[in-house]
Amino acid sequence: MSESHDGEHVHPESGEDLSLYARRAQAIEALLVEKSVCSTAEVDQMMSLVESRSPSDGAKVVAHAWTDPEFKARLLADPQSALAEIGYSLPDTTPKLAVVENTEQVHHMVVCTLCSCYPRALLGRPPDWYKSFSYRSRAVVDPRGVMREFGLELSNSVEVQVLDSTADLRYLVLPRRPDGTDNLSEAELAKLVSRDSMIGVTNPHVPEGIAAS
Image 1 (spheres, rainbow, N blue to C red):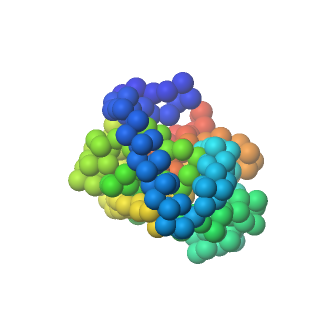
Image 2: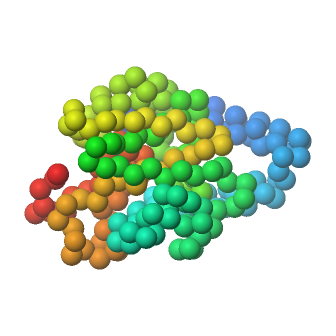
Image 3: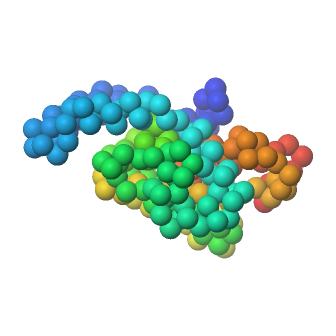
């Protein structure tokens, strides 16, 4: 298993030719503008938003949910409104966002089997491995095997639910807060939340000196 410089997992097929995606995006944009679904200005606005976002934004949201039970309840029930409370207002043209919580009994893992649908308005661009055919095909039939490649081995007692993102609905995983982190600040907690844990292929980082649950 290989990793990038920031510790995120790099899928073996991350080198796959991505020019296809660029051409596809250009064709879709042209069609949407032609059909008056959106304007070029609206597309540019969304692209600017995506470029300004990164997994650190999602990590801040997760950490806030870990420390504020009432906010977490609102985030799960109405993500758009809850995000707006803390400064993450999503444009009306943004696909619907659903937030799903990992628990001791259920673990969620997100994939887009058709292309690369992803909560870009919050997390920025998806990693290359998320867009690869290998991940998109294997995540559905062998999610535990995929997670093992990322270093995550779940107990057989944990139910794994694979969620398929679509053009109309995107998912954000709210990972479980690591045990033994009660004394950490919200900023410190955010550093434990990785991009991959918000997709569901890993769990958050565990601070040194604390055994993983």
